[in-house]
Length: 293
Image (cartoon, rainbow, N blue to C red; front, side):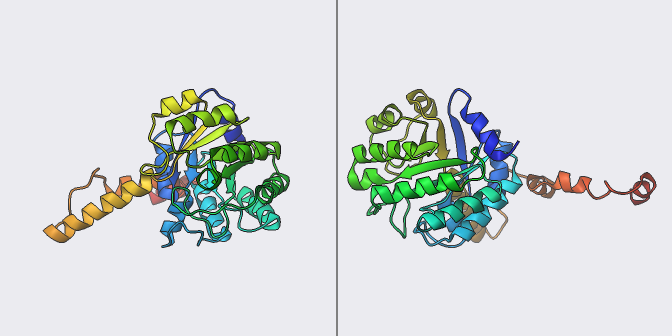
């Protein structure tokens, strides 16, 4: 079963999928080890690993390369940020083919102007509704498998208001999108209204300190959301831990205690050491295996 088919199967179940955000293969493997069913490749985190803010500075090929590495590192379905699709309908068509070809389960494409910025920052710009819908239609037409998910993200709430964001979401569903990502509703009432007013599956973006109020995931599930992404959890946690560890190292001039003590072997196991060790002698004859043991 492909990752895209696995994601479709998850969507068919009752309840809401929770997909923490990964920005590299280690964080993706940690999400899998923690028992989650889906991984979200964060665009902001991907940009940060390349040394850039989430201002639309990362190219399609850089994003696709990271998504492909993450999809290859885990067996879970990976949903990836695809920003604005990186151009017009022609660019969107290639974007879909590139992500799908790397084994990703689905992508979201937004209606911001270019260069875009993080959905929880101010002063965003959006393109005309029809320009975005043309990209959604192109994305749907470009996929090779109907299992590959096209998620329509609208940032219209911050620019044109909540009603326009809902209208764009429903128009995207009519254009063939599989799910609506209405970015940054600003009150709990708006968060609750999205699944009621949008005529299809909805994604909730959980950003601590962003425009959307914090809420319990059980509450979001009861509201009717099918997918919740948590893009910044691991990146913010890692930044905080690194800052503290480096400050301790500089102040004490000794290796500081870790949040979780791990042996060298345990660290390598996160990256698949057991699987690779098994290959060391897997292709030897029994006699050769004994000679190397």
